[in-house]
Length: 366
Image (cartoon, rainbow, N blue to C red; front, top):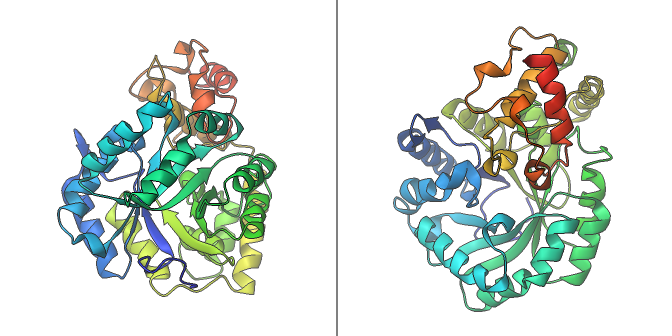
């Protein structure tokens, strides 16, 4: 791997949005064991945000990583998320609270979170980028970057206006590579054009590339090789300019599987790449809702509707799976409780028409 930053050891990172959970929050014991295995395997990159797991991710990393390892042993990435500030004067106090929550004096990377055309206007108005560059000059941030969910033309605009940006995090997987709504390939090409190292998020598309249709599964099974996750993550990691691929591992089984093929990383060979192309074609024919279960939509929902779970149930019904069921199996509100306020659609990085999809789900599942 090309070494983009001296303190980043390898090209595989621990995404801390989907953590091991128990009844009252994050399972610290399990999380600590996962961190220990991750670190002992030669990796050191951790990615979080104040919005992840309803604010619990930053604190869990403080307790399970920061308090247990020397600061120089790990790379810590946090983000400035739009919902937590309204004006420029909010940003520094918020940043200070984030450092305190994480138990740190500085962040290795600080990203402008979930940038799109609408968000970018707010970040510009609030001088968010300028504030981050100031904090870097003060030693509170080592590297400033952004995470991105929009068209490639918007990314090009941002990187042209702020060439000081050092890294870009994009959604990148074999299904979204040529998808017209995500534009993974085009966003990747914009990053290459601007010579920016790339961080990959959602390499398994929120887990949807793990449970595949039978015909697709048969193609991977015929390779007699690794797991479904291995083909997805190795696909993403095999492109030039990819500095880091994040995986949101929520249990030890997922951690062990991911480490089994990323500790000694090898890109997909021609036979595996051909299989991935065939699986991609089958996957796209399903016509399922491309929800990645990031849960950004649920945080501001006034009716506490478990949108990702409902969409999962609707997808399961479309695929004629036995696990398909009504929304009464979920905790929280029903699809029919939606008051169409639109907060979910504003927050959704996949730009889904959530209100109309919930209306359809109510008819199908309730």
